[in-house]
Length: 121
Image (cartoon, rainbow, N blue to C red):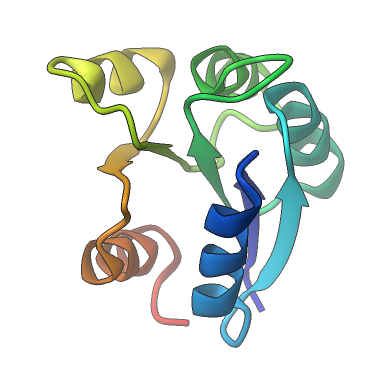
């Protein structure tokens, strides 16, 4: 079973993602960017769903750390943001995100992205 790390500080958003994904994936949870980086390094998930607005270390910086580490640089990071501004897609890719989705997450788009990076669940 593929492993997904959800890095999200809003409990309701985490619960929604868990409900969507728990049947098909092993899920790990981190509630801030620094913990997300640590869990990515220690658990080596197959993919990271990274909220961009996080405490301690934001998702932009956390993604840069993940992509700068040889042990984790090839793990796909999907950026998620509720505060999507013009240019955020490009900013997310510049930080190292492999894909960028806005919240509320469109489930069809999310599953298309997961399928593209992880194959069928």
